[in-house]
Length: 507
Image (cartoon, rainbow, N blue to C red; front, side, top):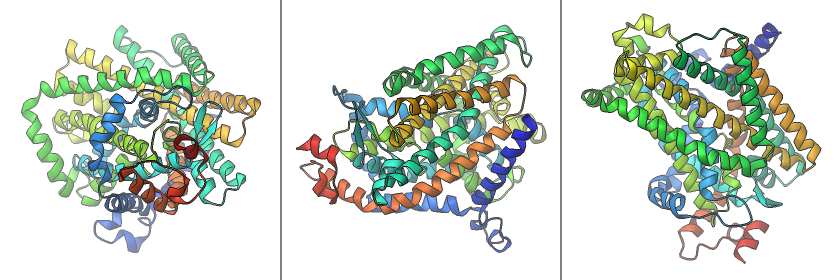
C-alpha cells in the first residue's frame, strides 16, 4: 500500500517539477546567465511584489507602525467575526510552520548562506502582495451567521461574474490543497513528540511502539476537539499557542546568538557576500542561491498563494486595507524574524565547515539544524535543553499549522454548502487524511513523498490566485486611496460594485 501511495506521490512531484522548473527545463533558457536558473513562477511572484510595491507607494513600509498599533490596541467587537489580532494569530498559525526550520535549512544547504539574503528580498516585496490579496478578501467578504467568510473562493467568484459554480470550484480547490498538505503536518507532529520523548528519556523509540500510538490518539483527540468547536474555538487555541511558540523560539535562538556574539559580524558579511558570490560547495552559482532563497521565502510566507486570504476575511476590521497591512506584517514576522533566526543558527553554527561539507550534506534537514545548535552551545546539558525546546517549538509549529489548514478548509466548505452533514463530512475526511500522515510516521516510512504532495498543491494555488490579484488590483487601489483620505469610510460607491457587508457597517 505504501509503495502504491509513494508512486502516486511521485507523479504529483513530476508535475510540480515541470511547473516549478519551467522554463529552466528548456535548454535555450537554462543557458542564459543567472535568469536561466529562475523559474517563471518565481519571476512572476517577485515581479508582482515589485509591481504592487511601486503602485502602492511602499505600503509595507509606510503603514508598518500603523498595523502594529492596530494589533496592540484594537479590541474585539461583540457579535460579528473575530478581532484583527485573532485573525493575525490564525494566519500566523498556518504561515509559521515546520518549514521555518526545515525549509530554511534546505534553502541554505542548497544555495548557501546567500540564499537567506534573497529570502529577505522576496519577503519585502511579498509583503505588498499579501496586502493586495488580504485587502481583496476584506472587500468581498460575506456574512454567514455570526461569522465573516471570504478569501480566494469569494473574491474569485465575484470578480469572475458571480456564478456559484466558480466559487464552488475555487473552494473545492482549496479543500484539495489542504488535503494534500495535511498528511505532512500530521507526520511532523508525531516526529516532534518522538523527539521530545527521546530527549527526556535518552532512549530511541522504535517504530510502531505502543507510546507512538498513544501520541496518535492524543493528537487526534486534540485536533477533533479543536475543529468540532468551529472557527472561534480554533482561534482561541491559536491565540494562546502562536504567541507562546513565537516567544519561546525567539528567546531560544537569541540566547544562542548571545553566546556567540563574536560571530555576528561574520554572519552578515557571509550572507551578503555569498548572495552574489556563492561558495563552490553550494553550487557556486548566483542563480542557485537566488532561486533557493526566493522560493523558500515565498513558500514560507505564502504571499501570492491565496492560502491565507481566508483568515484575512474573517476579521471585523474597520477598513479593508487595515487587514491588508496586518497580513503584510505577518509576512515580516514569518520570514524576516522566524526564518532569519533559523538562518542565524545554521550559518553561525558553521557546521558545514566544522564537520566537513561531505558529512554535513549527508544529514537530514532537522539533523543539520540540531548539529548547528550543538556547535553554538556545546554538547552538554545546555545543548540537551536547547534540543528539547526546539523540538517543542517544532511540534507547536506543526500543530498550529495543521489547525490552520483544517479551519480554512472548513471556511471553504461553508462557501460550497452550509449543510451540517456536508461540513461534518469535510471534517471527517480531513481527520482521516491527518491520521494517514501520522500512521505513515509510526510505521517508519519516509516523509519525502508527503512533501511531494505539498509542492504540487502550492504551485496550483499560485497559478490560480495570481491572475485574480491583477484582475482585482484596481479595486485595491481605490480602497487604498479611500484609506489614505481623511474620511476612511468604505462603502460600495468607492469601488463601484455592491458590497452589502461594508454598506451595513458604514451606513
